[in-house]
Amino acid sequence: MSRNNPGRKGNNRLLWRIHHWAGLYTGILIGVLSLTGALAVFIPELDAFIKKTHYRAVSTAPAEGEYPRFGESVAQLLREYPDFRSYYVELPERPGAVAEIMLSIPREGGGSQTLAFFVDVGQDRILGSRVHQNSLANYMRQMHVRLYDGYWGRQLVGLGGIALTVLVITGLLIYGNFMKRQSWPQVRKERGIRIAWADWHKILGIGALAFNLVIALTGAWLGLQPVLMRWLDMHAPNRHTPEIRMEANEDKAKVIDWERAFAAAREAFPELEIGQVNVSVNGSSTLTFRGSIKGTVYERNINSLVLSKETLTPVYQYDVRTKPFSHKFFYIQEALHFGDFGGLALKIVYAVLGLVSGFLSISGFVIYLCRKRKKKGNEHAALKLTVVYCLGIVLLLAVIALVSLFAGYATAALGAAIFINGLLAGLLVYALIRFFVRRRRFKGKKEVA
Image (cartoon, rainbow, N blue to C red; front, top):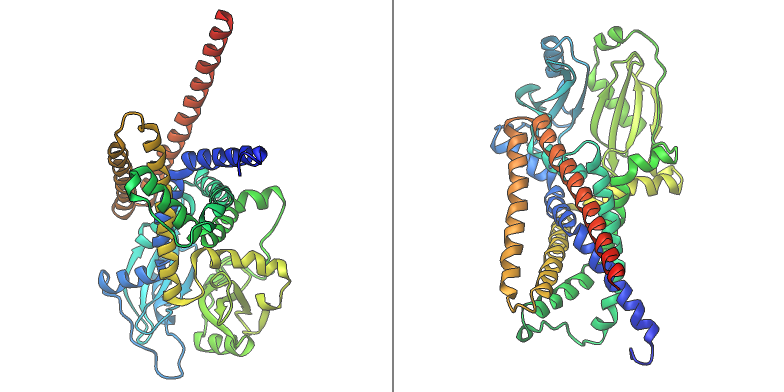
C-alpha cells in the first residue's frame, strides 16, 4: 500500500514525528496531570472522609422541614474575628456532613488567609477548624489546575491540554487503520518489550480516545482561560455587580434571619439546590445563594440568586438553562473535565481512564527508550529508568503535599514556583546551547567539505 501511495507514507512519517516529539516533550506533564486528575475527581468525597475521620466533624440532621442552621456559629465567629474581610458558607451535600464557614482574615505580615470552620447544622455549633489553603483538598485541586505555581503553572496545564489534543488526533490517524485490520486487539509479547508495550499503547490509546479528546480540549480551555479571556476581552457570563448602597461597616454589622432568607430563596428559585451562600461586606447589602440544578451538566454552584438583606426580595437571578448557547458552553467545561455530573460511578470511570492516559505517557517513554537502546540489546534498562522517573515524580508530588499540609500553602507554592521556573529556564538554556553547538558543527562540516 505504501509503495502505491508514497505520499501517504510521507504523511504518516510526518504524523509519527509530530506524535513522537509532542509526547516526548510533554509526556511527563501529561502523566502528572493524569495522576492528579484521577485523584481530583474525588475531591468532595475524599475531603468529606478527612473531615469525618481526622477532624471528627460529623453533623446531626436539622429537624424535618428546617433549613441548615449556622446563624449562631456565624455570629460567634464574627465576634471573635471583628477584623474579618469576608465570609461565605458551604452547605453540606449529604446527611451527616458539616457546613463550612469560610472566613477570610488578615495574615500577619500582610495578605489574608481563609479559615474553614466546621459547623453542626442540626445543633448550630462549631466542631473544629483548619486553614483552608493547607488542606489536602486544596492541594489536589491546585496541583492539578496550576501545578501549584501562580503564574506559569496554569498556562503549562493549558499547553498540556493542547499537546494531548495533538497526540490524540495524530495517534488516531497513525494507528486507526492498524487497529481496524485486527479482528481482536493483540499484544505481541513474543517480539520483545518494545513491541509489547507499543501494542498496549495503541490498544489503550484507541480505547480511551474519546475520553482523552474531551479531557484535552476542556483542559486546554480551563488552563488557558484567564489568558485567553484577557486577550479577547471576554467576561464570565454570570456577571453581576450589585449597587453599593451603604458603608461597608454598616453592611458587615447587619443581622440576618437565616430561616427567612432560605425560605425566600426557595420561593424565588425552587429548583436551585443551594450549595453556597455569600454574604456581602462591601456595602451592597445582599445575600447570594449559589447552587446547581438537578439533571443538568454544568459547573458546580453556577446558578445564583441574589437577595436584598433588608427585604429578602430578589435583586438578580441567573439560571443557566434559560441562557444562550454561549453561556451553556462556557459552564459545561469544568463539569465535563472532572466528571462532576453523573455520581460516584462516573467518577470511577473518569479516574480509571485518567490513569490510562497516564499509562500512555509511561508506555510512550518506554517505547522511546527501548528504541534508543535497541542496538545495545538492553531493553530492560529502559523499564528500570522509567520506574526511577515515575517514583521520582510521585515522591516530588508527595513532598509538595506534605510541605503544603504542615508548613503551609505559601511555602509549598514558593517551592513549586522555584522548581517550575528553574526547570523552564534550564530547558531554555539547554535548547539554546544545543542549537549553537549544532550550528557550529554544521559550519565546521561545511568548511571541511
